Image (tube, rainbow, N blue to C red; front, side, top):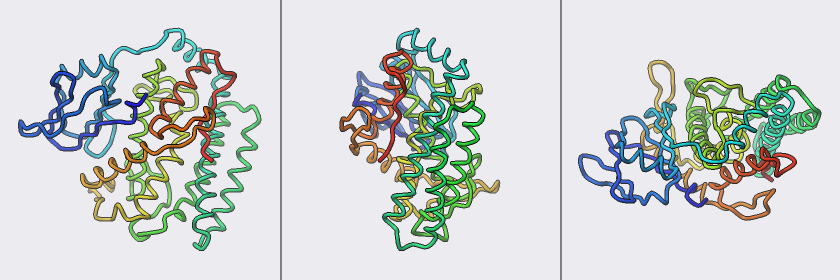
Length: 343
């Protein structure tokens, strides 16, 4: 499990990845710039013009190291992985529950409830830590509404209603997200969520971190034998990792949103780190991406007590722990799926 702490991010344009024995090599201009033992890696993420040798791809597939290819600015393109591991009966049960509306809705409800709860905790901590700031009345109102939504979600609901409640919760949460930005307000503000493409600095930052989460969660799901493409809350589309998108809902507020806020509020990222293209899309600079990736890796190494397991584990292992718990539930070893609730 420890290898999930380590993801190799390659952002240098023109870099070439290959292997020598049991080590992954990163080369530029025929010089080896980095050497990493493959047993220390859980994944490799290549941004832009980065190429991999076929023997390295084969070794990564053999060792269960997921390779993802993204554009230079973080848009997902492709993923390389080996044969799906795990018991075929587990995947059959996953597909069966995804096709049964009642079973799928039960899992989706758990995911939505914990997402709303974790969003509420983010806002409550903001109230506690920034009690002197303006606009906190709106944040308090949002906290109350999210609490009401959690109670409403306790009733059995069809999947369409669950998605509607999830959308309302997201609008409520992001409706006051701008109040959580306490520094560089002229250049970092949040009016609404914009995805494809992100239209401001904060949305560009959030989208990039969410992409990293999808990679890590997909790797964890594949490691336990689940199919990242078949989810319960997010609808299925060709090439869409629906189950990974389901599972990252637990981690968006706790990990992604808080990391983005920290980078801005502590001025680790500044307006010069972003640029707007002619199309209106906002992109991060290469230096900003490297700063973010370093901060993301450091955050994954921090420790937290798992609310269900009762053990202290690294944040980077939360993805694997939740994938294992979901697999245990689908196999019938648990009565329900225990999500990650941040307190």
